[in-house]
Amino acid sequence: MNALQEMIDHSRRVVFFGGAGVSVASGIPDFRGENGLYAREYDGLTAEMLLSHSFFFLHPDIFYDFYRKHMIYPQAKPNIVHRRLAQMEQAGKLTALVTQNIDGLHKQAGSRNVFELHGSIYENFCMGCGRRFPLSFIMNTSGVPHCPDCGDVVRPEVTLYGEPPDPYFMTGACREISNCDMLIVAGTSLQVEPAASCLEYYRGKHLAVINRDETPADARASLVLHEDIAQVFQKLNVR
Image (tube, rainbow, N blue to C red; front, top):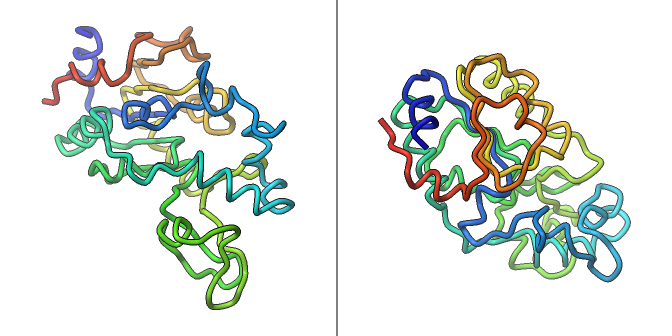
């Protein structure tokens, strides 16, 4: 903890790169843990299958049933990690936040320069006319949601398996990572591409990895903490 605090204190441009583990303390289960979303099968199908581009178009009814039950947590609130990162940005220490999560909790906590690589559950659009819809529209409909204007399917603006991430967010994330002097990677197994490849753009001095399990970035990191992320951020001082 002392080493992590010292790295942050002596850095001018910190970027945070996070994954599902960041939101566990908010009551949202992680994906790849022992009891995570991807460790189970759902009527013989895996989560990766159900959340794929092809499955969405072939079986939208099953997709939305799974999506509403397992991917949306509207009652979740930002935890200490989200709040501390927002404080770091407000203090001028954190220059950007890159997340693989779609829960929108970083923005709820007050972070502004957020790159949501895989989109957000709060952004939805009609595939026909392009009309935008809030999350409440998805939650207050049953089955496959359809646009009241043109009748086409309304889908969440999240990146499904088999789809490329938003190029604007990818480009911005890589730019911020390449320009920072400290990169904190937390709560991610770094197994999802191309998001994980963003780390290849880092050329700074301090790379800190905070994750329960080992990651591919551990070998090149300046500091590795296999600890609970929320407990680590609880002890951090923002100054």
